[in-house]
Length: 56
Image 1 (cartoon, rainbow, N blue to C red):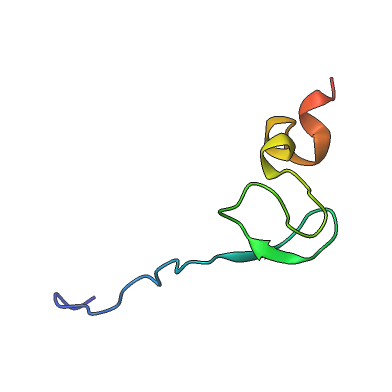
Image 2 (spheres, rainbow, N blue to C red; image 1 turned 180 degrees about the vertical axis):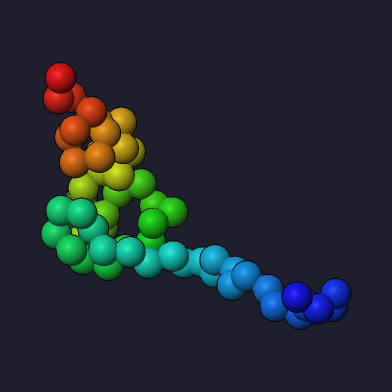
């Protein structure tokens, strides 16, 4: 690789839009809840991915 490499990683430019895990509506991931259905990203994360954190 040449010493002077001008390649750069793409910046994550806000708003970062993703699809809701519940209703599939696009929303800004920096928000904690989906404005369409009220799905709570924080609650989902605390339970583990897809509720697998509760399985034993």
